[in-house]
Amino acid sequence: MEEVKINKNLSEKALQDYEIVKRAVLGEEKAYSQLTKRYWDSIFHKMLNMVHNREDANDLTQEAFAKAFDKLTSYTPRFAFSTWLFKIAINNCIDHIRKKRLHLLSIDDKVEGEGSQDYSFSLKSNSLDPEQTFIRTQKVKQMRKVLRRLNHKYRLMIELRFFEDLSYEEISRELEIPLGTVKAQLFRAKELLSNMLEPAVRAGRI
Image (cartoon, helix red, strand yellow):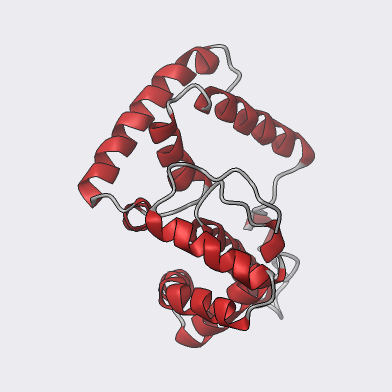
């Protein structure tokens, strides 16, 4: 792994993780085991909260680590390893949930198999059409542009909560600060961001 600039605000635990990651990339099996031991329980409980099934949660936890380890060379310490790992796990779990829903009920199937009435029209697709996708992309770009104007502390809070999808408790553990501080800083960050976004909202750009 090439040496890269490390986020100076990473916690001591995150810096330790990065050292373990570098050893893992060099092929040290013990390093992989260390990373798994450090985060298995946290990932498992996150998956369990999302799917409410222990067997599925266990499978999804294994998949998350497998995917993370498969692309470990792409990890850079812009955020903590745990943040990166959780994002992989959450995205994989969301894909699992979507596929399971599609398997259980196809929008092309009739609700009454033997009847003549087709209720499939009432099921809305979760996917966006090209125009909606473009609009959403532009809004995200505009929001990220405004977000860069926040100081690092508040910007990090917004990114972890809304872009990395971490809970208050996970942010508290990640940054090693009290839960109350997380809530207070996020409230202030959202307040500042809202004030910054107001002109763009009035102009119809967001």
